[in-house]
Length: 131
Image (cartoon, rainbow, N blue to C red; front, side, top):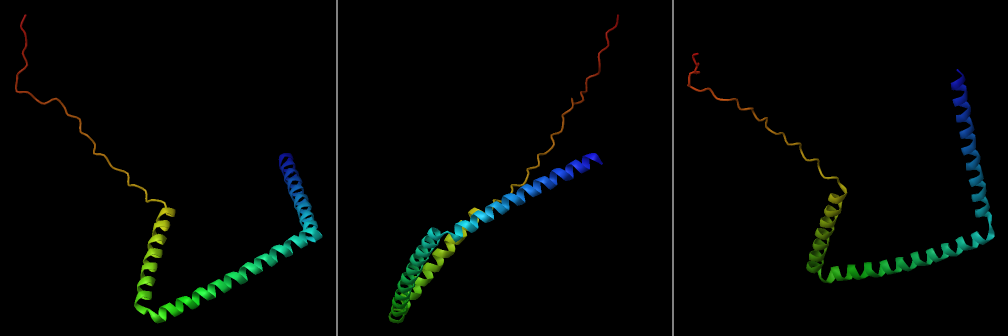
């Protein structure tokens, strides 16, 4: 009984300690978020990211238009390129997928039990010496 009470008390103290540490970290994070300097940094990073995304969209749209135009003018070449790209992607996928998978366990080889050879019987009669 006494041991159980002590264990419960220790457990209770540890939980309270972790909760108080969590509260401290949450208040620190709230202070970091509400800080004006951090707001400005976050806004600048967000604007930079939005500019990069806009540029990437433009680049993607340009390549898409070029690909559609090329496909319309050269359908046979486009089909060949697409099939080669598909084969390449599939082979790369298989190569990386196989590396992630653990190799199957090798079966344990069973060894044959070697029989113990006994001394063979001889046709000789035992010789008894007479005194």
